[in-house]
Length: 420
Image (cartoon, rainbow, N blue to C red; front, side):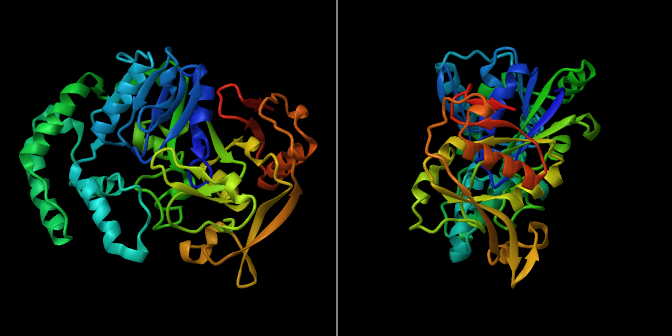
């Protein structure tokens, strides 16, 4: 490695969990550095199928130390449920999981406000997960957030009281049910008591690991096109989703990042609102095959053809050295595949970076057609054994984005990877 960042190259749901699980076998540390439980990484191994929302996906390897960075926001109830599920599967992680004392908390008023804001926007709703992510990050930036460190430093009760009083005024104004301070206080002290063994300061752990040249695998949540600066604002998430966020969200110096690996699905999907230029019409015969259910929310993902314009931009802004393409097997059986290779707006060529969300929703996509294949490729483990049309699809993908495709996922299982 020794410091590899795995990033999503589209609007999320690219299959990062599979890529992280694949590389974690050689990692000493696997770390999350952004987002919250609005992200879902699916890992399939000998223990079963797991949808991981907060815990780093490397938790399944007993030799890994798993770090939850200060760039995350944590819903304690969700984290405790996830830990219970992992224990039930037979995992032991008591001395391997470390949660930053600097990470911010998601509180009940964050989730309440998330829903009320969406309802108040009406037709202009962003399409959030309503998990309280955005309001929690908004509190962090506006100096209203609460952290695990507030329990340790003895400031939690006072700061919570101020926030409940403040948030109840907003909730009442929006027609919601206000919260009781004492109930919330007792609930969160109980969470802290259960999670206290995992809460620590990560800086010494990270710096010692770097000094010893240990292998770090850094796990990004969401996709690069959901970044609040470089994504399709306002249809984005609350935290930075780029590889560079590892510096602020975990304490990794930029110069220590040795490789960025982009994960891209062989087609394009998106959950919630916002533009999806290559989106398939509801009556398109390929749409049912490419339609999926989101791991975190259970919502149906909007499906479209592969859009190379966004993958190329994501690779540029993150500095991706190579790509891990997932779900190639899903395309089996589609006779003709379309790939978006560029955009036009009002008849003129444009690129993703030229556009905001409103203009991106109006672009005309320039497509190239490729012949599909009908063979089931899920058992293929060598690139040369793929159907010729599948090989041509990957080769064209690679050439058009000008980045090598080193890994291809062709099934959900851990071993279903073609290494080039």
